[in-house]
Length: 326
Image (cartoon, rainbow, N blue to C red):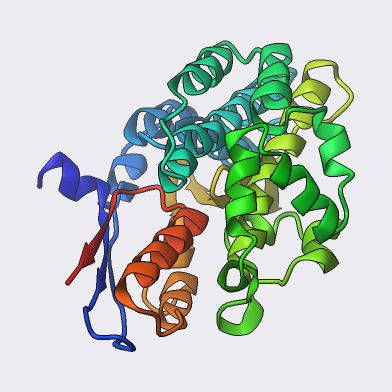
């Protein structure tokens, strides 16, 4: 098996015929469970950090929470620092999508200076520097003030000022197709995590593309705030859950959704382990991605490709994807 095969792949095929169904194929990454089963429980967090190229800190932290809960260990003071690693990773991932991918959709030059600023700040879990980058490079205002926006008209007013690529991208989405809910109106991407925010609860159509992309901005603003709270001990770190001795699970928000690890120990060794990623939930056969792409409107080829790209960006898989146009 090659490295690329081990990482998995997603292919979306868009036929030339107007109205023809899109074809989505998903090849899951290689199963790493056999490696985990041969590993001592206390070494699993470091193992998964090395095995996952994307969201490595989230994988490591989720494993740590699950293993510690299964072992009956009391969380120590280091857990806040571990969660801060995850928060910094989330901020970095969101900023890279905005600085590199959103600009590409807008046909603007990629903002590599902004990308480097976030990467550098995330590398050292520098909450203050990340907060400044979020304020200046993403919202052009205090993130808390942006989070207070509670209507589509106020969101459009912020977006139309066009002070950042994020604002210009949201302005780009204020068209009929991006505002309309897709299959069943189910929340896309990170929208379910932030369904309590007024923009997602009532201002924007549930399941719409604009709601999914706005949810990324909400997540970025809130994650930056939580990172600062963890650093100053104003927030308690996440914990794993143990329903029975030797059994535990943990769920950790990551840049693409909710990551879950489940573990069973027997005689001090790992006898069962399961990882469920946001991409696996969305792109497995019958999952959210298949339903959403099947519901794409019958458009001429050019706007159909653009719309499919926006949807893929909203779902944001953690493995490589290709969009093929017939």
